[in-house]
Image 1 (spheres, one colour):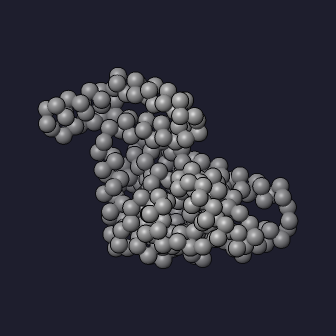
Image 2: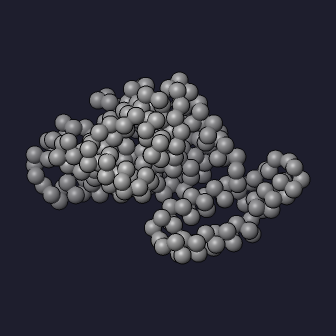
Image 3: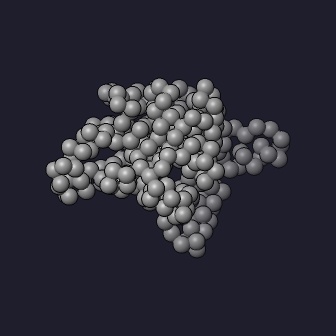
Length: 263
């Protein structure tokens, strides 16, 4: 895979994607298109079992949209073009959210606007202690357009979403962790290694079980409790027929580490 602003490595099934763009790793249309293509390919690559995404350097994850380009775009006052731009971002983040593989955003600095919307699409989020997160769009006279109003409310609840979005304030990593936006906070020097350890822990579990658990959670959020429970039962039943389930249960009884094969 060749990209101008993304760097990808794959070690032991863990793909590490780093955004590296001048102007604080800010998003523009080209970066969004690269993200779309990158994660489509990672989704379809069987050698990739999990993804870690971070920003180049130690100051910025993704500071947000390219404001200069956004202002130029807005000055054209084209509602249809603006809607299409929003839909492109939403479609791209939907690919990330529905990757079918565990993914972690390792937030290593400023994570604002579209950067936070991007991070919210990943399975989990880790952050360095110096990270700053927020959705400051209202201070520019706009609203989050890449799914932020929806994902933040679902993740942290409507009260947190209202505070973060309506004030446009920046919040530290510890506060983001307290309200459930970030899963774990690490010292800056430990962020990537600790995030990789977290991913390896997930990958050591039953592969099919992890995939179905992710599906049950994400799909269940879009249904009633009763429908979500039916989905859970269906997936539980399918898992009961797999070799991994037999291996996991037998390994527990025999007091030995399980050797999952994804079958």
